[in-house]
Length: 128
Image 1 (cartoon, rainbow, N blue to C red):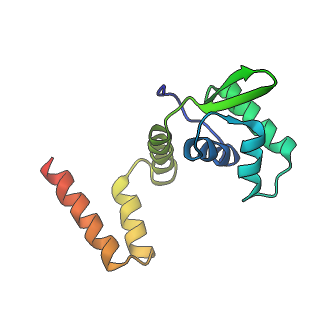
Image 2: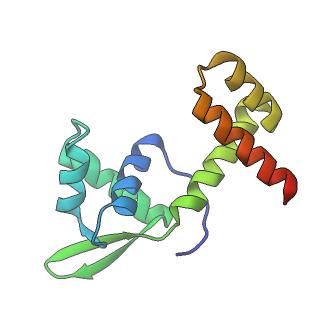
Image 3: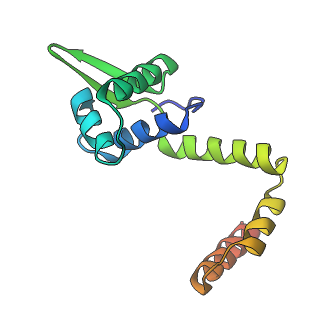
């Protein structure tokens, strides 16, 4: 999978999640519509439009096997998650991970287990 910009909308993320998580890949548009429709009340036409936009953006590829087209991801989920996370931190917290973490720790309920996991991750990062 190529590393590419993952400039995709919230609605497009839903389609991408189907392609990243459903197996086997590639999937026909009918399978994508079926999977998306199980969670969203979107028309098939809307879902087909999202698929087309993702193809144009280079986020998904298409195998043109007659009579069906099959779609598959061209971008890696992990890369897109990291890019979206960085974009969010830059936009909302001016790029400061410290401000983001401090805000979440102060404002959100965090379980003891989550605190232990954060401590473990920070300790590991500190020792790398």
